[in-house]
Image 1: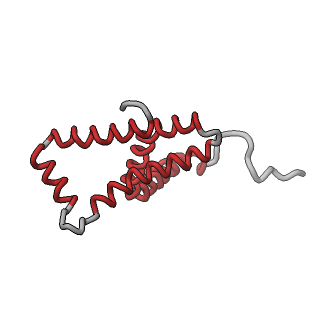
Image 2: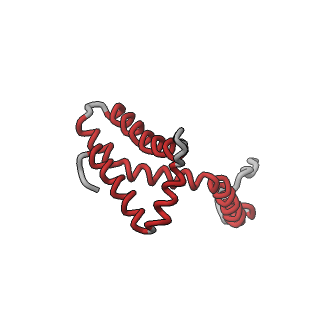
Length: 137
């Protein structure tokens, strides 16, 4: 006499298999929520990264046409973006030996001119990008 197989291959699924999706769905929801909680502190950095990538794309595309190696073009683009961020930040933090506080001057400009100050700064940034890339933004 042969014994019946230990694993049933025919008929309805075993009781545990029927309820497995009902256990896995809440577990999946909990794990996705925990992943979101881990990712939340990084959202500002990711937002800045996306914004900088979108802003730097025209510079990188132009460099990519003139530089034969893609890695070199990416490195130069990264250095340009870094310089465009670091130089103004250093200038804003810098205090002139004569006593001119650049941050105070910028705040005064914004207070005096309101929305026109944004146009002035925007025009300066566009002029700087036009010098670097050679096209108007």
